[in-house]
Image 1: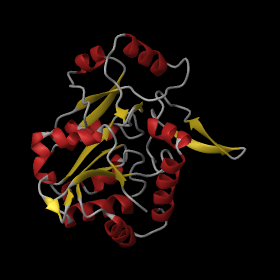
Image 2: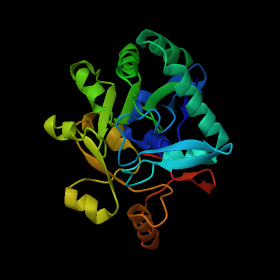
Image 3: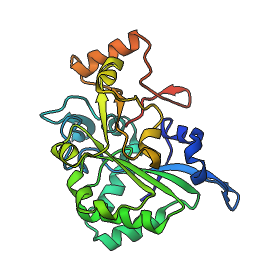
Image 4: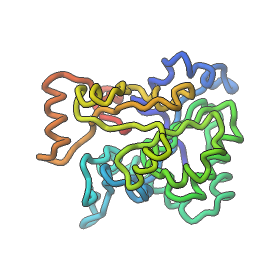
Length: 266
């Protein structure tokens, strides 16, 4: 198992003044960094609906399969089709963890955590796949109070069972578009909503997050926000048409990795 160095989106957290304390100082000669811990998309997402996509093998080649109620394709799943190392890392993490008990998962993740980790996004890809796994991350955050852990999740029942036990350095955002959206409303949870236009976000009264700061900052743990549609979308879909319009109007919706434009998942 291993953590991944920050992608082009979440690395921008280094520039957020309110998060500086988590990245201040060094570990030996190493500067503290932003990392993510990722799982295989779709297979680790028990409550996904609007964004449900997963990799399947057809004649030995990876292809993407969209869920029956998919409204916008999961970009992480698209990455797993495109990049061998991305698929292998996320699949290895998931396969190693899925049959462990809570204590084993806690120890296994803790053991491979980089010593220079200052901020961790739990899941650029994947989600909390069972209660034991969610509990493991609660324990990891509590064991590392000098580090910040944050996540988007549709696994709301797992969160609700531990809602009163979440440490201050673990910031959770409900991701609308799942099978238990009713809990967002009944429990008045902070949420992130994928929008297809700036006007849609404005109508909701939500700011659009471009750097994950709305999800990561502890002081914004009760403030909902929007995320602009991104990634590779199914041809002819409403999401694909929205992307075409965003590009035409030069509206920001993607992030560059090195010199190649690779849109990052949210």
